[in-house]
Image 1 (spheres, rainbow, N blue to C red):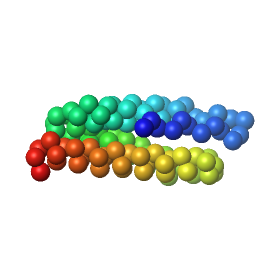
Image 2 (cartoon, rainbow, N blue to C red; image 1 turned 90 degrees about the horizontal axis):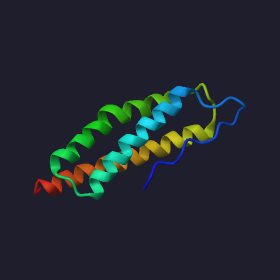
Image 3 (tube, helix red, strand yellow; image 1 turned 120 degrees about the vertical axis):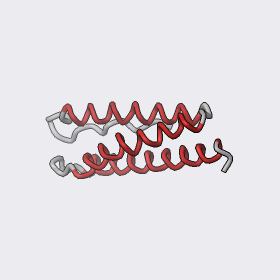
Length: 103
């Protein structure tokens, strides 16, 4: 599963550069963690990705979620979708880590 692309801007003004950069960073974090899960990486590597999601991705998603300057429902829905996908991936990674540890 891949992250959905940034929705198109509904105004004549494109999304600010920080939104594009945030999306690029989130996509890299998500793709790396997903690849580790699909390759059944060892527990330490999976834990690294869990920590990266919690430390790097979730605060960015929270900041994007609190961005109200856009007033665009599609943007808010997109951020909520990303939050759900990251939560699901984090839980899957934690389960995989526990399985790898024999729990």
